[in-house]
Length: 114
Image 1 (tube, rainbow, N blue to C red):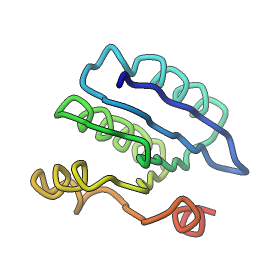
Image 2 (cartoon, helix red, strand yellow; image 1 turned 180 degrees about the vertical axis):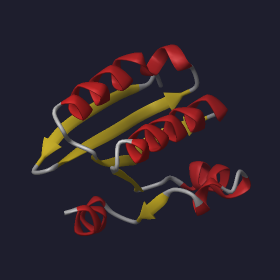
Image 3 (tube, rainbow, N blue to C red; image 1 turned 30 degrees about the vertical axis):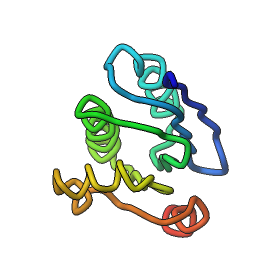
Image 4 (cartoon, rainbow, N blue to C red; image 1 turned 90 degrees about the horizontal axis):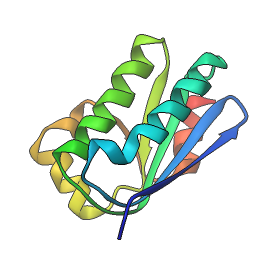
């Protein structure tokens, strides 16, 4: 399964849904460009929904770190939700689970951000 994404603006936040396998930096350039557009619009609260992700390697993790770092540097916040077990294990092994804000559902993430 290839990688795809969907971005929706909801109230004062951005909801990003990632699907498939994220294994290459070239796969995410469009995603990063769209996030930059929303930063320029003044939106700095992001929910990343991983419910439809199949696989993510170290490149995928670096993309999440990049989004997290850029958003924090702009005074914003990122919450990751619906993490599949394989990806959750990767976050635990790399200790990134202690850095990212993680919630079970998009609704719980919205309560934190709105």
